[in-house]
Picture 1 (cartoon, helix red, strand yellow):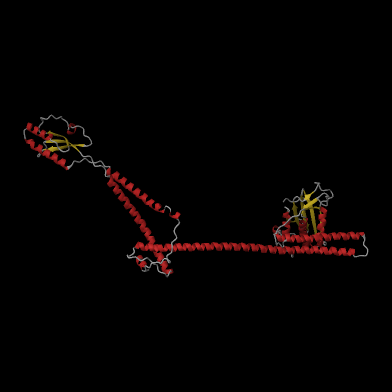
Picture 2 (cartoon, one colour):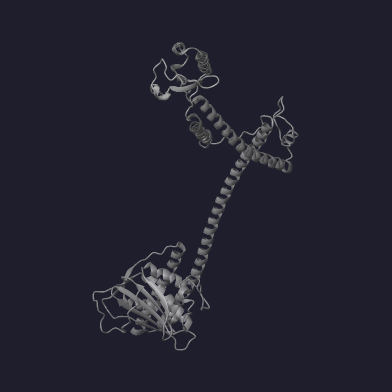
Length: 532
C-alpha cells in the first residue's frame, strides 16, 4: 500500500537549484555514535556465546566415556573361541597343548589370553585357584578384562582376555564453538528482527502521517529520482524520510529566524518600555517642578507682600517735613526687614533652580539664635495677624550651624500650613521652640488647631499629599523633609493628646556653644525630645 501510494507521486529528478542542501549535524553530536550502537549488540553476542558454550561443556562433553572395542577385535576373539571349541573333543594332553598354541598367537589388541577348563579338574597348565580378575595383573586405565564362554551345547570353559581399549576421543572444541557461535548469531538476529520490525512499524506510521500531511497541505507532488529498476520498499521509505528530514531542517532554520526576530522585537519592546519609563519619570519630574514653582511662587508672593507692607510703613514714617530720631530708627528697622525679605525672595529663586536641577547643595553657616529668630519673624510677616510665639534658650554663647535659608524655608512652610488652618479659628496660636540636646538642635512647631487624620499621618511627607487642605500643591512637606534629611536630620509629625499638632525637627551637630548649660533666664525648659 505504501509503495503504490509513493509510486503514484511520480519520479521526477530535482534540478540542482531546487535541491535543498541539508544542514549537516554538528561533529560533536556524531562523535562515537557508531561505537555506541555496536557495543550493546557485541556485548549481547559475547554473553550468549559464553553461556551456550558453558552449557555444552557441562552437559555433553564432560560425561565419562564408556569403554568399547572395535568390531575387528571382537571378530578375532570370536574366531579364537571357535577354534578352542573345536579342540575340546581331543584327548586331554593334546587338547591342552593345542589350546596353549592358540593362546600363544597374537590377537589384535589382546595383551594376555587365558583359558579355564571347567571339565578337567587337573589341567596340564598349572593355574591358581583364583577368580579371573585376580589371576591377571592389575589393570591400567587403557585396559579391560573380558570373559568369553567356550562351548556349543554348554559352557565347557572360559576364555579370559586382557584387552587394550583405545582412549576416548577428546572433546570437540571446534564443534562446540561453532554451535555456540551459531546460537549467538541466531539470538542476535532474532533481537535485531524484533527491534527492526518495531522500528519499521514506527517508520511506516511516520511516512503515512507525512504523506497525509503533504496531501492536505501541499500541492507540489513529491519527486523521486528515476532509476532503471523498480525501487524497493526500503528505498521508498528512505526517500520519504529524506524529504521529511530536509523539511524538518528548513523548519529549524525558519524557527531560528523567528526566534531571532522575536528576540529583536523583545529588545525593541524593552527599549521602548525603558524610554516610556524615562519619559514618565521626566513627565513626573516636570509635574513636580510645575507644582514646586507654584509653591515657591506662592511663598515669593508672601515675601513680596511683606516687602510692600514694610515699604508702606517706611514711606509713612519718612514722608514728613521733620523726622524724630525714633521715627528714623523705626524706618531703619523696617528697611532692614525689607532687605531680609528681599534675600528671602532671592533664596526662594535659588531653591527653584536647585529643585529643577534635582540636586540640593548645603551652605552651612553659623547664626546667633536671636538673629535667626529675628530673621524668621521677618520671613513670617505675612502672618502678622496670627499669635506666633518664639521660645528659645537665651544663651549668648550659642551658635546655630546649618543652612539658614533651607531651615528657614522648612519653618516658614510649617508655620504657613498652621496659619492657613488657624486663621479662620478664634484663639488660634502657633509656637516655635528651639531646644538644645547636647550638640544637637531640636525645633518644635506646635499649634492648637485640628489634628491630622490618622490615615494621613504615615504619608504626610509624601509628594502631592493635599488631604485636609483646600489649597496647595502637596509638595511643601515633601520638600521640607528632603531639606532636613540633607542635613542628616529627621522630621516627624504627631497629634498632641491635649489637642493640636506638633512637628519635630532634629538636626545633628547644629548647636555650637562654649557653655554646656543654658542660663537660668531661658524662656522655657522644653521636654526632652523623643528618640529618633
